[in-house]
Amino acid sequence: MSSIKAKLGHGGNRKQSKASFSTNDGSQQLDVYRDFFGHYENKMMNMLQPSIQGRAKVAIKNIAGKNGKHGEYHYEEAKFHKFLSKLANGLTSSFGSALSSISSTYKQVEDLKKERENELKSQIFNPNMREIVKELENLSQQEKVVEQQNAKVASAQRQTTKVGDAQSLEKLEAAKRSLRENQDKLNVSMEAFLRTEPERIAILQKAAEIECEYYRKAAEAFQELQNELTGIKERATTSPVVSNRTDYYMESPRQEFAFSTVVGAPDPVPQSNGSQEPCCRALHTFEAELDEDLPFHENQIIKLIEKVDDDWYFGELNGRRGHFPANFVEVIVPLP
Image 1 (cartoon, rainbow, N blue to C red):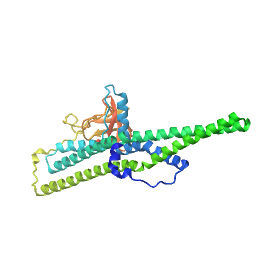
Image 2 (cartoon, one colour):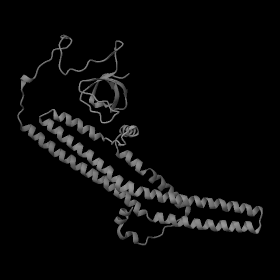
Image 3 (cartoon, rainbow, N blue to C red):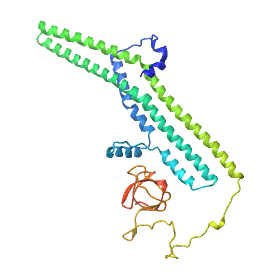
C-alpha cells in the first residue's frame, strides 16, 4: 500500500479528530470491511472480463492443459474485429475501407480492456488487497482471543460462586485482567485500522482513475473512427462507381440440372431417417480460438445439437463437436 500512502502526501501526519468509538461499533464496521474486501476483486473481475461462457471455457482449458500454459480470455471485441477484418479483406470498395477502420477500432478497445485489467491487478488488487485482508485477519484473531477470555471470566465467576475460596477469586481476577488487556489491544488495533480510512478510499480512487482512463481512450478511439468514416463516406460520394457486368452470371437451378457441379456450392443438408436434422449453414469461415470451439468453412452444413445462449450454438461437423458463434451461421432446420 506504499504507493497509495505516498499519494496521500503529508495529510497522513495531520492530527485527526477522534470519533466516538466502541468495540461493538468497531466489530460491525469490520464485518462490512471483510464483506467488501473479501469479494471486491472477484466482483470487479466478473464485470470487467469476458462473458461467463468465455471464462468457463478458459477455466476448463487451464484444468485440462498439459503444457502448463494458461489460456487467455478472449474479449467479445476480439471476435468482432476478426470477423470485420475478414469481410474487409474481401472488398476493395469504400465499404471495405469502412469495415477495416471499424475492425481496427475494436482491436484498440480489446487492447485497452487488457491494459485496464492488468493495471487493476498490478496497482489495486495484488499490492493492496492482500495487505488489507491480512490486517482484517489479524483483527479477527484478536476478536477470538477476547471471546475466549470472556468465556474464561464467565467460567471463573461460576467457579467462584460455587466454591468461593481465595484461589478461585484469584483466578477470577487474573481472568478479568487478561480480558482487559486483550480488550485494550483489540481497541487499539481497531482504532488504528479505522484511522487509515483515507488510504482505503485512495485505493478506490485509483481504481476509478484506471476506469476513467480506459473510457477516455475508448471514447477517443471511437471519435477517431467517426472522423475516418466521415472521410470514407465523402470519398465514396464523389468517386465514380465502376461496374464490370461481364463478371456477373446466373447459376442454373440445381434441381433442373442435377448432373451439373457448381464450384463453392454449400454442402447438402444432412438427412436422418428420411427427415432433416437440426442444422445450419456457415455464412463465414470460423477459426477455433479454443479447443472447445468448432471450426468450419463458409457454406459447410453443421449439425445443431444445442443452443447455448443467444450468441452461441453447440454442434457437430465431421465427427468433431464444439461451440461456435450464432452470427456466423444461418439456421436451416431449427432445433425442436
